[in-house]
Image (cartoon, rainbow, N blue to C red; front, side, top):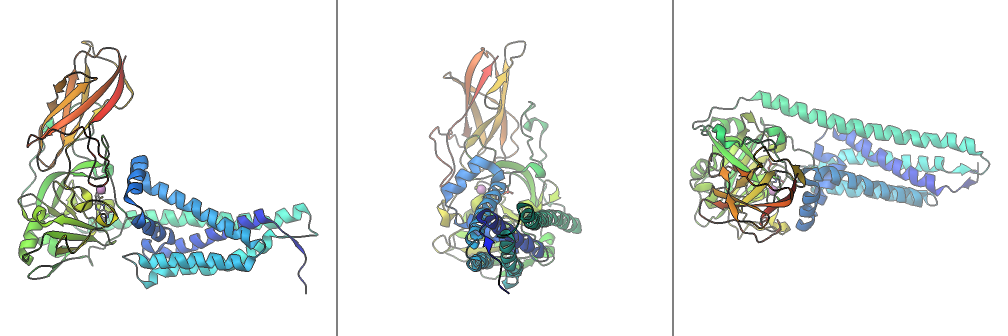
Length: 515
Ligand SMILES: Nc1nc2c(c(=O)[nH]1)N[C@H]1C(S)=C(S)[C@@H](COP(=O)(O)O)O[C@H]1N2
Ligand SMILES: [Mo]
């Protein structure tokens, strides 16, 4: 039998490529539901990408999209993947065999990246392998469908190509279903596991938060950030799911006695509670990548005492189950501050996104050098010998938090209506963990600095809210600028610095109009 003469149809062939690519991802996503989330090719490839992104680009993405960065990343990956597979389909219009090889090569590349992920094993390539094995012959079939026999009428051709659209639709549906199932699964799992343990009572409770810590002004953030509103920054594209029944914390390195703790053993340790404001080094001037919570956990100090730190150590490299690492100066974990191996956040077990079941929190240091989530390992070491995740990507090896102050009310470009006496209320937040906030000053336009009123200070490690009654708010456009002074008398500098490499500095200014 000779095959009939077929007309080229590059457009439809490109569509075939995109559809076959979708089949690959959909199958892999569905199969990966039975494996770990990091076995899904999109999550693995995205994760690998995140690991090689230069710090300036990461910083730009976060400043542009904030915590939407992951959505943007997945969207862009999808667009690139569609373009690539479209190109492969287009090539397949004249060279179908080459096209199927290129698609298989894409699959193999994804499998290699899956294997590079810290938490993956060889088995985790199976989802992508299944997707590739099914998608490659599918592409050949679809390419044949795309090509119309020369004798065929336009109507008959459309009928046949409808099957192409059909496969595409089924693929898209499967993808959405797999993604939804993953989300629902993850939520259920965490809820189920969280219900499995009761937070122990602290030996020392955090001091109660006086009502006056909260400035009573509409638009002010809550003094204690609810868990659901707490900013989230990490390199994990799928939230790692850690099973507390098999979880272990290993403390090793320059120690006298290595220690491996189970979750149960950790919970049996005396726990303390602290009020602590976490801050991200990527937070720009006036930004909201900071949150305040009550943390429950075991002081790192007591565990380090137990293992016995050897002379010469000056750093602890904490490691997450997903391979992320942070380098914390040893001193910050052994001095009198309350650095914690934390299990509780605002009275609940840690939410999955914030490190369930165990994370570290350290007063005074940016999160990237201290606040390791999904914690599994502490290695006592030296800065000279080990380099942490972000340090190898251009950020400083040490990250003490800089003084910051922010205007929360009004928002930029707000229209303000003065009260009966011609005054407008302003408010905001300031922090300088480990030093505390001694004063906040506000300047209207080029006027003199005015002393703001401070909300009650809860601890030197928590943020302080401030307010100012702007008495003579004249109609027109104005700028409002804020600066803080820390407990050691250091006045916040107006010198602008980008977040890279060790945190932003500069004064926050908001423009507004009094009407
Ligand atoms: N495993 C892991 N832990 C991590 C990170 C990460 O990428 N992976 N990011 C750190 C950074 S940069 C910050 S600012 C804090 C943020 O903690 P949060 O998401 O609970 O606010 O987590 C830290 N811990
Ligand atoms: Mo961060």
